[in-house]
Length: 430
Image (cartoon, rainbow, N blue to C red):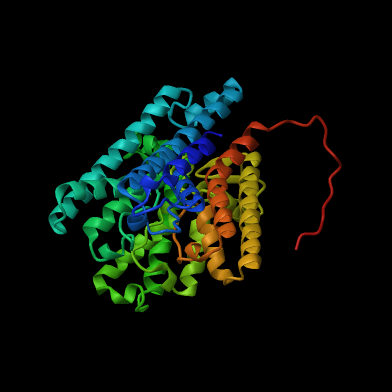
Protein backbone atom coordinates (compact mmCIF):
# COMPACT_ATOMS: atom_id res chain seq x y z
CA UNK A 1 0.00 0.00 0.00
CA UNK A 2 2.87 2.35 0.79
CA UNK A 3 4.51 1.75 -2.57
CA UNK A 4 1.19 2.12 -4.39
CA UNK A 5 0.59 5.43 -2.60
CA UNK A 6 4.03 6.79 -3.50
CA UNK A 7 3.57 5.62 -7.09
CA UNK A 8 0.28 7.52 -7.23
CA UNK A 9 1.89 10.71 -5.92
CA UNK A 10 4.78 10.34 -8.37
CA UNK A 11 2.37 9.81 -11.25
CA UNK A 12 0.43 12.95 -10.38
CA UNK A 13 3.64 15.00 -10.10
CA UNK A 14 4.91 13.81 -13.48
CA UNK A 15 1.48 14.43 -14.97
CA UNK A 16 1.79 18.13 -14.18
CA UNK A 17 2.61 20.34 -17.20
CA UNK A 18 5.67 21.69 -15.36
CA UNK A 19 7.26 18.23 -15.33
CA UNK A 20 7.51 18.08 -19.10
CA UNK A 21 9.53 20.18 -21.50
CA UNK A 22 7.65 22.25 -24.05
CA UNK A 23 3.93 22.90 -24.12
CA UNK A 24 1.40 20.53 -22.63
CA UNK A 25 1.91 17.87 -20.02
CA UNK A 26 2.69 14.18 -20.32
CA UNK A 27 -0.09 11.68 -20.91
CA UNK A 28 -1.34 9.73 -17.92
CA UNK A 29 0.21 6.47 -19.13
CA UNK A 30 3.58 8.18 -19.69
CA UNK A 31 3.48 9.59 -16.16
CA UNK A 32 2.31 6.29 -14.63
CA UNK A 33 4.85 4.15 -16.49
CA UNK A 34 7.75 6.46 -15.63
CA UNK A 35 6.74 6.88 -11.97
CA UNK A 36 6.40 3.14 -11.36
CA UNK A 37 9.62 2.47 -13.28
CA UNK A 38 11.50 4.97 -11.10
CA UNK A 39 9.93 3.88 -7.80
CA UNK A 40 10.52 0.21 -8.57
CA UNK A 41 14.10 1.17 -9.63
CA UNK A 42 13.65 -0.42 -13.05
CA UNK A 43 14.72 2.16 -15.61
CA UNK A 44 12.22 1.24 -18.33
CA UNK A 45 11.10 4.24 -20.38
CA UNK A 46 8.56 4.90 -23.10
CA UNK A 47 9.77 8.47 -23.66
CA UNK A 48 13.24 9.99 -23.90
CA UNK A 49 14.14 10.94 -20.32
CA UNK A 50 16.48 13.93 -20.96
CA UNK A 51 14.36 15.60 -23.64
CA UNK A 52 10.81 14.71 -22.59
CA UNK A 53 11.00 15.65 -18.90
CA UNK A 54 11.94 19.04 -17.47
CA UNK A 55 14.41 19.56 -14.63
CA UNK A 56 11.48 19.32 -12.23
CA UNK A 57 10.51 16.02 -13.80
CA UNK A 58 14.08 14.76 -13.43
CA UNK A 59 14.03 15.69 -9.73
CA UNK A 60 10.79 13.73 -9.26
CA UNK A 61 12.27 10.70 -11.04
CA UNK A 62 15.43 10.85 -8.95
CA UNK A 63 13.45 11.21 -5.71
CA UNK A 64 11.28 8.23 -6.63
CA UNK A 65 14.37 6.13 -7.39
CA UNK A 66 15.95 7.05 -4.05
CA UNK A 67 12.76 6.33 -2.12
CA UNK A 68 12.29 3.09 -4.05
CA UNK A 69 15.80 1.85 -3.41
CA UNK A 70 15.87 2.95 0.21
CA UNK A 71 12.36 1.65 0.79
CA UNK A 72 13.03 -1.74 -0.71
CA UNK A 73 16.14 -2.27 1.42
CA UNK A 74 14.40 -1.02 4.54
CA UNK A 75 11.24 -3.00 3.87
CA UNK A 76 13.15 -6.20 3.21
CA UNK A 77 15.19 -5.77 6.39
CA UNK A 78 12.15 -4.90 8.49
CA UNK A 79 10.24 -7.89 7.11
CA UNK A 80 13.16 -9.97 8.28
CA UNK A 81 12.76 -8.40 11.73
CA UNK A 82 9.06 -9.23 11.75
CA UNK A 83 9.73 -12.79 10.68
CA UNK A 84 12.39 -13.16 13.39
CA UNK A 85 10.04 -11.93 16.09
CA UNK A 86 7.47 -14.49 15.08
CA UNK A 87 9.98 -17.28 15.71
CA UNK A 88 10.77 -18.86 19.03
CA UNK A 89 13.60 -17.67 21.26
CA UNK A 90 15.81 -20.64 20.40
CA UNK A 91 15.37 -20.06 16.66
CA UNK A 92 16.12 -16.35 17.01
CA UNK A 93 19.19 -17.12 19.08
CA UNK A 94 20.48 -19.53 16.43
CA UNK A 95 19.72 -16.99 13.70
CA UNK A 96 21.61 -14.30 15.62
CA UNK A 97 24.58 -16.62 16.03
CA UNK A 98 24.50 -17.58 12.35
CA UNK A 99 24.36 -13.93 11.24
CA UNK A 100 27.34 -13.07 13.45
CA UNK A 101 25.62 -10.29 15.33
CA UNK A 102 23.83 -8.71 12.37
CA UNK A 103 21.28 -7.34 14.84
CA UNK A 104 17.99 -8.01 13.08
CA UNK A 105 16.18 -7.29 16.32
CA UNK A 106 17.37 -3.69 16.43
CA UNK A 107 15.04 -1.84 14.07
CA UNK A 108 16.74 1.50 14.65
CA UNK A 109 20.16 0.04 13.84
CA UNK A 110 18.77 -1.50 10.66
CA UNK A 111 17.32 1.79 9.45
CA UNK A 112 20.41 3.82 10.31
CA UNK A 113 22.61 1.20 8.68
CA UNK A 114 20.64 1.33 5.44
CA UNK A 115 20.79 5.13 5.34
CA UNK A 116 24.50 5.22 6.13
CA UNK A 117 25.46 2.64 3.51
CA UNK A 118 23.26 4.22 0.84
CA UNK A 119 24.41 7.80 1.30
CA UNK A 120 28.10 6.89 1.67
CA UNK A 121 28.27 4.88 -1.55
CA UNK A 122 26.21 7.42 -3.47
CA UNK A 123 28.36 10.32 -2.26
CA UNK A 124 31.67 8.65 -3.20
CA UNK A 125 30.44 7.66 -6.65
CA UNK A 126 28.89 11.09 -7.22
CA UNK A 127 32.21 12.82 -6.50
CA UNK A 128 34.05 10.50 -8.90
CA UNK A 129 31.56 10.90 -11.75
CA UNK A 130 31.15 14.67 -11.27
CA UNK A 131 34.92 15.17 -11.29
CA UNK A 132 35.27 13.16 -14.49
CA UNK A 133 32.46 15.04 -16.23
CA UNK A 134 33.93 18.39 -15.19
CA UNK A 135 37.56 17.60 -16.02
CA UNK A 136 37.26 15.13 -18.88
CA UNK A 137 34.19 16.46 -20.68
CA UNK A 138 34.49 20.14 -19.73
CA UNK A 139 30.93 20.37 -18.51
CA UNK A 140 29.99 23.40 -16.39
CA UNK A 141 30.47 22.56 -12.72
CA UNK A 142 26.75 22.74 -11.75
CA UNK A 143 25.81 20.49 -14.67
CA UNK A 144 28.62 18.04 -13.88
CA UNK A 145 27.57 17.82 -10.24
CA UNK A 146 23.90 17.33 -11.16
CA UNK A 147 24.56 14.62 -13.75
CA UNK A 148 27.17 12.89 -11.58
CA UNK A 149 24.82 12.85 -8.59
CA UNK A 150 21.92 11.65 -10.73
CA UNK A 151 24.01 8.79 -12.12
CA UNK A 152 25.37 7.86 -8.69
CA UNK A 153 21.94 7.58 -7.08
CA UNK A 154 20.53 5.79 -10.11
CA UNK A 155 23.49 3.36 -10.11
CA UNK A 156 23.43 2.40 -6.43
CA UNK A 157 19.67 1.95 -6.52
CA UNK A 158 19.94 -0.07 -9.76
CA UNK A 159 17.44 2.37 -11.28
CA UNK A 160 18.95 2.64 -14.77
CA UNK A 161 17.84 6.22 -15.47
CA UNK A 162 20.34 8.55 -17.13
CA UNK A 163 20.29 12.16 -18.32
CA UNK A 164 21.51 11.20 -21.79
CA UNK A 165 19.37 9.75 -24.56
CA UNK A 166 21.91 6.99 -25.25
CA UNK A 167 22.28 6.04 -21.56
CA UNK A 168 26.01 5.22 -21.19
CA UNK A 169 26.82 4.54 -24.86
CA UNK A 170 28.69 7.85 -25.10
CA UNK A 171 31.04 6.63 -22.35
CA UNK A 172 31.57 3.15 -23.84
CA UNK A 173 35.38 3.58 -23.91
CA UNK A 174 35.76 5.62 -20.73
CA UNK A 175 36.70 3.49 -17.68
CA UNK A 176 36.50 6.56 -15.41
CA UNK A 177 32.77 6.70 -16.07
CA UNK A 178 31.90 3.02 -16.49
CA UNK A 179 33.78 1.43 -13.58
CA UNK A 180 32.34 3.67 -10.81
CA UNK A 181 28.85 2.87 -12.13
CA UNK A 182 29.68 -0.85 -12.20
CA UNK A 183 30.97 -0.68 -8.62
CA UNK A 184 27.86 1.12 -7.37
CA UNK A 185 25.56 -1.36 -9.11
CA UNK A 186 27.37 -4.37 -7.64
CA UNK A 187 27.43 -2.91 -4.13
CA UNK A 188 23.76 -1.97 -4.27
CA UNK A 189 22.90 -5.41 -5.60
CA UNK A 190 24.56 -7.35 -2.78
CA UNK A 191 21.96 -6.46 -0.17
CA UNK A 192 22.18 -4.61 3.12
CA UNK A 193 22.66 -7.69 5.38
CA UNK A 194 25.66 -8.70 3.27
CA UNK A 195 27.13 -5.18 3.19
CA UNK A 196 26.95 -4.73 6.95
CA UNK A 197 28.55 -8.12 7.52
CA UNK A 198 31.32 -7.45 5.01
CA UNK A 199 32.03 -4.14 6.72
CA UNK A 200 32.55 -5.96 10.00
CA UNK A 201 34.38 -9.06 8.79
CA UNK A 202 35.70 -8.27 5.31
CA UNK A 203 39.04 -10.02 5.93
CA UNK A 204 37.55 -12.92 7.89
CA UNK A 205 35.50 -14.99 5.43
CA UNK A 206 35.33 -17.82 7.95
CA UNK A 207 33.06 -15.63 10.09
CA UNK A 208 30.62 -14.87 7.28
CA UNK A 209 27.11 -16.27 7.56
CA UNK A 210 25.79 -18.81 5.05
CA UNK A 211 23.69 -16.08 3.44
CA UNK A 212 26.71 -13.82 2.88
CA UNK A 213 28.88 -16.64 1.56
CA UNK A 214 26.14 -17.78 -0.78
CA UNK A 215 25.40 -14.25 -2.04
CA UNK A 216 29.03 -13.25 -2.59
CA UNK A 217 30.01 -16.55 -4.22
CA UNK A 218 27.00 -16.75 -6.54
CA UNK A 219 27.25 -13.07 -7.49
CA UNK A 220 30.94 -13.44 -8.32
CA UNK A 221 30.40 -16.56 -10.42
CA UNK A 222 27.48 -15.05 -12.34
CA UNK A 223 29.42 -11.84 -13.03
CA UNK A 224 32.45 -13.77 -14.31
CA UNK A 225 30.37 -16.08 -16.48
CA UNK A 226 28.37 -13.17 -17.90
CA UNK A 227 31.52 -11.11 -18.45
CA UNK A 228 33.21 -13.91 -20.37
CA UNK A 229 30.15 -14.84 -22.41
CA UNK A 230 29.15 -11.33 -23.50
CA UNK A 231 32.73 -10.38 -24.31
CA UNK A 232 33.28 -13.40 -26.54
CA UNK A 233 29.82 -13.50 -28.09
CA UNK A 234 29.77 -9.80 -29.02
CA UNK A 235 33.49 -9.38 -29.81
CA UNK A 236 33.02 -9.32 -33.59
CA UNK A 237 29.55 -7.78 -33.66
CA UNK A 238 30.17 -4.46 -35.44
CA UNK A 239 26.89 -3.07 -34.15
CA UNK A 240 27.99 -3.52 -30.51
CA UNK A 241 31.47 -4.44 -29.20
CA UNK A 242 33.07 -4.70 -32.63
CA UNK A 243 32.88 -0.92 -33.05
CA UNK A 244 34.94 -0.35 -29.89
CA UNK A 245 38.70 -0.40 -29.45
CA UNK A 246 39.97 -3.90 -28.64
CA UNK A 247 41.01 -2.90 -25.12
CA UNK A 248 37.53 -1.49 -24.39
CA UNK A 249 35.64 -4.65 -25.33
CA UNK A 250 36.35 -6.59 -22.11
CA UNK A 251 35.23 -3.52 -20.14
CA UNK A 252 32.08 -3.38 -22.25
CA UNK A 253 31.47 -7.05 -21.48
CA UNK A 254 31.79 -6.39 -17.74
CA UNK A 255 29.41 -3.44 -17.95
CA UNK A 256 26.82 -5.47 -19.87
CA UNK A 257 27.15 -8.40 -17.46
CA UNK A 258 26.55 -6.02 -14.58
CA UNK A 259 23.69 -4.29 -16.38
CA UNK A 260 21.80 -7.53 -16.93
CA UNK A 261 21.94 -8.25 -13.20
CA UNK A 262 19.55 -5.35 -12.50
CA UNK A 263 21.04 -1.93 -13.27
CA UNK A 264 19.44 -1.30 -16.66
CA UNK A 265 22.30 0.88 -17.92
CA UNK A 266 23.57 0.03 -21.38
CA UNK A 267 26.83 0.97 -23.08
CA UNK A 268 25.84 -0.54 -26.45
CA UNK A 269 22.58 -0.72 -28.41
CA UNK A 270 20.71 -3.62 -26.79
CA UNK A 271 18.54 -4.06 -29.89
CA UNK A 272 21.69 -4.97 -31.88
CA UNK A 273 22.87 -7.75 -29.57
CA UNK A 274 23.12 -11.27 -30.95
CA UNK A 275 20.17 -13.58 -30.26
CA UNK A 276 22.30 -15.69 -27.94
CA UNK A 277 23.15 -12.62 -25.89
CA UNK A 278 19.45 -11.79 -25.55
CA UNK A 279 18.70 -15.28 -24.26
CA UNK A 280 21.55 -15.28 -21.74
CA UNK A 281 20.53 -11.77 -20.65
CA UNK A 282 17.01 -13.12 -20.00
CA UNK A 283 18.48 -15.72 -17.64
CA UNK A 284 20.68 -13.25 -15.77
CA UNK A 285 17.87 -10.72 -15.45
CA UNK A 286 15.54 -13.40 -14.10
CA UNK A 287 18.08 -14.37 -11.42
CA UNK A 288 18.73 -10.76 -10.38
CA UNK A 289 20.79 -9.67 -7.37
CA UNK A 290 20.98 -10.23 -3.63
CA UNK A 291 18.12 -10.42 -1.16
CA UNK A 292 17.22 -7.18 0.68
CA UNK A 293 19.05 -5.22 -2.02
CA UNK A 294 18.14 -2.65 -4.65
CA UNK A 295 18.30 -5.36 -7.33
CA UNK A 296 15.36 -7.35 -8.66
CA UNK A 297 14.80 -10.88 -9.95
CA UNK A 298 14.19 -14.01 -7.90
CA UNK A 299 17.51 -13.27 -6.14
CA UNK A 300 20.83 -15.10 -6.28
CA UNK A 301 20.21 -17.03 -3.05
CA UNK A 302 17.01 -18.50 -4.49
CA UNK A 303 18.86 -19.56 -7.63
CA UNK A 304 21.82 -20.96 -5.67
CA UNK A 305 19.61 -22.97 -3.32
CA UNK A 306 17.73 -24.54 -6.22
CA UNK A 307 21.07 -25.43 -7.81
CA UNK A 308 22.20 -27.02 -4.54
CA UNK A 309 18.98 -29.04 -4.39
CA UNK A 310 19.68 -30.40 -7.89
CA UNK A 311 23.26 -31.29 -6.97
CA UNK A 312 22.12 -33.05 -3.80
CA UNK A 313 19.52 -35.01 -5.78
CA UNK A 314 22.08 -36.05 -8.39
CA UNK A 315 24.32 -37.29 -5.59
CA UNK A 316 21.49 -39.18 -3.93
CA UNK A 317 21.83 -37.21 -0.70
CA UNK A 318 18.85 -36.99 1.65
CA UNK A 319 19.54 -33.39 2.70
CA UNK A 320 20.91 -30.19 1.16
CA UNK A 321 24.11 -28.72 2.60
CA UNK A 322 25.83 -25.44 1.76
CA UNK A 323 29.18 -24.37 3.27
CA UNK A 324 28.99 -27.14 5.90
CA UNK A 325 25.48 -26.10 6.94
CA UNK A 326 22.31 -28.12 6.39
CA UNK A 327 19.52 -26.16 4.75
CA UNK A 328 16.04 -26.79 6.20
CA UNK A 329 13.58 -28.35 3.76
CA UNK A 330 11.11 -25.49 4.20
CA UNK A 331 13.71 -22.99 2.92
CA UNK A 332 14.29 -24.61 -0.45
CA UNK A 333 10.58 -25.29 -0.78
CA UNK A 334 10.07 -21.55 -0.44
CA UNK A 335 12.80 -20.94 -3.03
CA UNK A 336 11.10 -23.36 -5.44
CA UNK A 337 7.74 -21.66 -4.92
CA UNK A 338 9.15 -18.16 -5.56
CA UNK A 339 10.94 -19.33 -8.71
CA UNK A 340 7.96 -21.20 -10.17
CA UNK A 341 5.49 -18.40 -9.43
CA UNK A 342 7.88 -15.95 -11.11
CA UNK A 343 8.16 -18.19 -14.17
CA UNK A 344 4.37 -18.43 -14.31
CA UNK A 345 3.97 -14.65 -14.20
CA UNK A 346 6.57 -14.12 -16.95
CA UNK A 347 5.13 -16.80 -19.24
CA UNK A 348 1.56 -15.54 -18.77
CA UNK A 349 2.51 -11.92 -19.46
CA UNK A 350 4.57 -12.90 -22.52
CA UNK A 351 1.71 -14.90 -24.03
CA UNK A 352 -0.73 -12.06 -23.34
CA UNK A 353 1.46 -9.42 -24.99
CA UNK A 354 2.45 -11.58 -27.97
CA UNK A 355 -1.18 -12.43 -28.71
CA UNK A 356 -2.49 -8.88 -28.28
CA UNK A 357 0.31 -6.97 -30.00
CA UNK A 358 1.61 -9.51 -32.56
CA UNK A 359 5.14 -8.32 -31.85
CA UNK A 360 8.18 -10.68 -32.08
CA UNK A 361 8.11 -13.18 -29.21
CA UNK A 362 11.85 -12.94 -28.43
CA UNK A 363 11.71 -9.16 -28.04
CA UNK A 364 8.51 -9.33 -26.00
CA UNK A 365 10.04 -11.95 -23.70
CA UNK A 366 13.12 -9.75 -23.21
CA UNK A 367 10.96 -6.75 -22.24
CA UNK A 368 8.74 -8.84 -19.93
CA UNK A 369 11.70 -10.35 -18.07
CA UNK A 370 13.39 -6.95 -17.86
CA UNK A 371 10.22 -5.44 -16.41
CA UNK A 372 9.46 -8.22 -13.93
CA UNK A 373 13.10 -8.38 -12.79
CA UNK A 374 13.15 -4.55 -12.55
CA UNK A 375 16.22 -4.37 -14.77
CA UNK A 376 15.23 -1.79 -17.37
CA UNK A 377 17.35 -2.99 -20.29
CA UNK A 378 15.30 -2.56 -23.43
CA UNK A 379 15.34 -3.14 -27.17
CA UNK A 380 13.20 -0.01 -27.57
CA UNK A 381 9.99 -2.01 -27.84
CA UNK A 382 7.96 -0.42 -24.97
CA UNK A 383 7.78 2.92 -26.81
CA UNK A 384 6.28 1.12 -29.82
CA UNK A 385 3.71 -0.84 -27.80
CA UNK A 386 0.04 0.13 -27.52
CA UNK A 387 -1.04 1.63 -24.20
CA UNK A 388 -2.57 -1.57 -22.83
CA UNK A 389 0.79 -3.33 -23.28
CA UNK A 390 2.58 -0.48 -21.52
CA UNK A 391 0.15 -0.83 -18.61
CA UNK A 392 0.90 -4.58 -18.47
CA UNK A 393 4.64 -3.80 -18.21
CA UNK A 394 3.86 -1.26 -15.48
CA UNK A 395 2.04 -3.91 -13.46
CA UNK A 396 4.92 -6.33 -14.03
CA UNK A 397 7.43 -3.81 -12.65
CA UNK A 398 5.35 -3.30 -9.51
CA UNK A 399 4.71 -7.01 -8.98
CA UNK A 400 8.31 -7.90 -9.76
CA UNK A 401 9.66 -5.39 -7.25
CA UNK A 402 7.46 -6.37 -4.32
CA UNK A 403 6.33 -9.87 -5.30
CA UNK A 404 9.39 -12.01 -4.40
CA UNK A 405 9.90 -10.19 -1.06
CA UNK A 406 6.22 -10.37 -0.13
CA UNK A 407 5.82 -13.99 -1.22
CA UNK A 408 8.99 -15.13 0.54
CA UNK A 409 8.02 -13.40 3.79
CA UNK A 410 4.45 -14.69 3.59
CA UNK A 411 5.66 -18.26 3.15
CA UNK A 412 8.03 -17.89 6.11
CA UNK A 413 5.30 -16.49 8.36
CA UNK A 414 2.67 -18.98 7.22
CA UNK A 415 4.56 -22.05 8.34
CA UNK A 416 2.46 -24.45 10.38
CA UNK A 417 2.89 -27.98 11.63
CA UNK A 418 0.28 -30.58 10.74
CA UNK A 419 -0.55 -33.08 13.50
CA UNK A 420 -0.92 -36.01 11.09
CA UNK A 421 0.62 -37.43 7.92
CA UNK A 422 -1.00 -39.24 5.00
CA UNK A 423 0.25 -42.63 3.74
CA UNK A 424 3.13 -42.24 1.31
CA UNK A 425 2.47 -42.27 -2.43
CA UNK A 426 5.06 -42.30 -5.23
CA UNK A 427 4.03 -40.87 -8.62
CA UNK A 428 6.31 -41.64 -11.58
CA UNK A 429 8.77 -38.80 -12.32
CA UNK A 430 10.23 -38.41 -15.81
